[in-house]
Length: 285
Image (cartoon, rainbow, N blue to C red; front, side, top):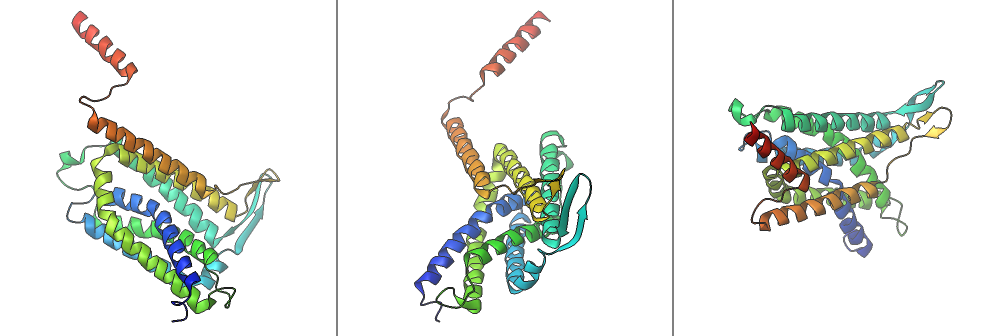
């Protein structure tokens, strides 16, 4: 009750909820792409299960925050001639998540651009259980990022400095639950929009590649990797990543609006020249 009557607690709750939604954008993009390969009747179920798993992982990690913090401790140190560092549980999970995202994104782009059409097979190209396993694996990585953000924003120190251990936990759990509910509401329309626009799908996969690279850099930074005696790997500020994502989406929305308003498809100048050369070749032959 004391936490509910504290205006600072409400400000912290709203701020953390907003950040959780922003951090969940990559989760929704991944959900949209993975669930898009399922049968139409299984897609809402996969999105719901995926987001509920995300909520469950985050809350479990919050209650085990002492264990999460212990994962920062190195369990294997090495100092070779060209590289040195110390591998921790957290760096291993984050680095592995980055590798998984890179593999998944590149393979999906290959499938969409050069793979066989799903329509020719007459069935969905993925199973619900396989999609859920992929979603669960990546949710573990995304959950670490979310929880560390929450712990860094909401102080568990005793009042008036912080909200106390119990109050801080209430705020963090409340923000996670509210953000997941909001994402559940909008996950369907977002997935529908992504699946109906191929360029948005490729853009989303490109975002996942960016996030994968960011996770690789973050994992290397957590492991304190240094090359050739002193060149340390630094993490990539998330602000740069989010700016690139939102700017790319803004440009793509402009393109979609222009395409919708245009009476005929917009064609690049080089493509027009190529088309004319092909026509001339056909006439000659």
